[in-house]
Length: 628
Image (cartoon, rainbow, N blue to C red):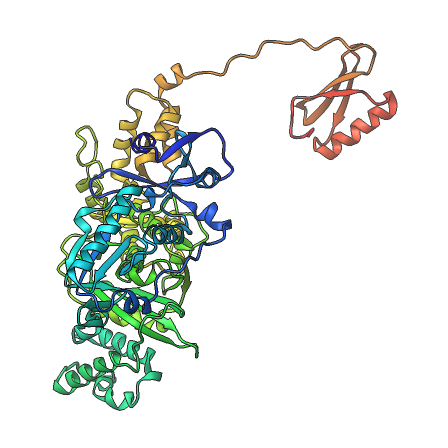
């Protein structure tokens, strides 16, 4: 078990009490094992002062790495976990688990200040060694000669060995002639911008229909203030947008397309990365592609791109819900531009409003979202970001890239843990994934829900029949033609009775049945169906645990008359009700005919009685609603 492993390795230790217990998010890794991460967005990140220790700037490349002949890149193994926390810091990184509270002894993943803390620590380790550049968990080493390079490398490795820093051997590169860092290619000849920054523009395919052309023109329009004579250049393309014009992509259109792409790559549009300027990451997804643009916010308020990126969706990703595709676009952009973004504040722009609620920087990771959404939210937690919504018509730069994406050779979706068994490998399961898929397709309501998941939900609930699904729309996803709510499979009507019978085997009782069902399956009214199954089962009712009978306790005899009176209603008899009062001391009975048994009428009659006999010390009733 992961908790036991972490405790055995000394990474965590159990504690009895903490004011800073963060919820955990279990993440499925590629090998099927579980990684436990704390959701610190709702605890320490929300109140602590961010450690903004500076990450190396672009100009540091020239001072440190320029003139080198060969380059070594060292990658640390479980970088953060190699830094021990002091006793006072440990209490702030406590996690709340099903086995109690545990606190980290080492720097955990997900704390907003971790990059700054790690950067400072590692720079202190290599302080005084020339030709070494540290950027979080990447260490770059060079030298003007091979001998100087090897001496520097030896000194760095010696310090690491003395302190106990471990490297990930398979990710280290030694004595390479060329490395890429912060969007720059570095070799002995100099430092150059990486061509991949504009590859998404340079290799963007020609539009094949009006929709793709509109998206491309929208991207050009986004930057039109920097592009001279744009309208004249694009005239052949605008012709295809005219009403009743047949689509025909000729040499004239191709020429305008190629020339306009050159403008998007020109110095009048593109800027170099500047750590002093604000970063903006605009992301978008289409039914078949992802696009992202990393930009700087300039002094005049405009956005100027640093780099573009895009790719097509894999066959599995094309079956994602709209919410998941838009989320994937953000993760794609974050990972693609990691070197620029890590350790720098960034504003993420999306045109899909539900993502604001899911990924907002000050909100906890959603517990009922699909597992991949939870993993992506955890990935984002490592960055200092703000997510904002922008209408699709104003997000043209990313939209254009998503509709003209670069073709990718990725056959498998690069996301761990996305294979969901859907009970198809369990021999005793009454239904399997293929049956659920078939029933879902034939079910009028679920087929409509599946369509909305894949193509987008309407702004208002279209019918009462799907109200319960609509209220969960941001937590629904599809897998192999089946619908899931978080990690639970939604069972169509034909399979529900079989599932109820399976859960009811052995008569485990309603609490156990609900616990099992809620872990794996769901449908509207499932809890009620489970309760009815138990209530209608003779064996369950016969053997159910009845509450222990309370021992009879006679009322103590009062010390004087009219100390304690007992009241109740009798009737109706001959269309009349009777308020009966009995004095516990003398057994005196007062009976009053009541035309009404409302609280107001009862109070009025009691006041009349008290005016005659005086106030009592205590009134006893059977908790009837007419009296209370």
